[in-house]
Length: 248
Ligand SMILES: NC(=O)c1ccc[n+]([C@@H]2O[C@H](COP(=O)([O-])OP(=O)(O)OC[C@H]3O[C@@H](n4cnc5c(N)ncnc54)[C@H](O)[C@@H]3O)[C@@H](O)[C@H]2O)c1
Image 1 (cartoon, rainbow, N blue to C red):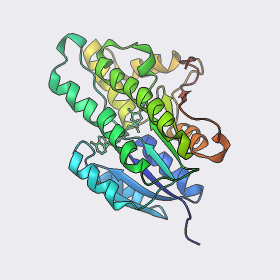
Image 2: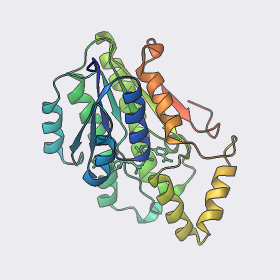
Image 3: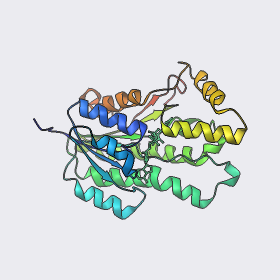
Image 4: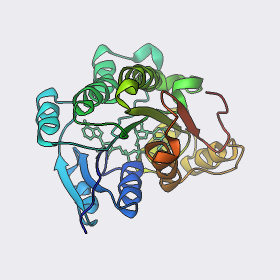
């Protein structure tokens, strides 16, 4: 039996994106898995009902072609993202543009483009970050700004699309065990002259639940927001952070 619902998942080669693909497949949804990393994307392509598209979402023309290729979709999950760890005083315009182009610009225009192909009952989930709310790591200023933009974009599209019955929400992961999470620890440890394993343990012990989150725990929250169980929820964001951030 073919799937009667279709999803587009960006960042599908990454830790959280791949977990979202797995959850959607388990829910019987056909998935178009998008990432710029063609090699890693092949892993997503091994799942039943998953087709892959290697696209650099920072390229506006490639983005437009991707949107044009998909006739209709029920779910859009914007999980593609890049991290940036630069001391505030050293941030360049080039770094600002590099991060904003993927985390904010691409996400905005994918919402805009794909919304045209979504009908009543469909839903979008954007991945922001608890970094959008805390500013706890000064080196993450550009990343945090880009993720704050995700929350704002989510609210605007939620208002815009509510009359059409399309819901738009966001999740804010805290510390999640993925390759991005690893690279953050390694880079901060280098910058701060600390041992990476000790820093990783210290970060995890700072979480009220005492551990990092797993990608599948983010995917579960994302599926809830996509699903009919969240039929009266739009314009919201949900922290998936083991209690580390407990405000909206
Ligand atoms: N891991 C964490 O602790 C954490 C915390 C908060 C938020 N997030 C967010 O969750 C999302 C998923 O991150 P993750 O932890 O799975 O990291 P990840 O690095 O494993 O996955 C991110 C994916 O996005 C893809 N990507 C980046 N730029 C792209 C581009 N221009 N075009 C297409 N694909 C592109 C990468 O190739 C990668 O596969 C990101 O938006 C990230 O900012 C992660």
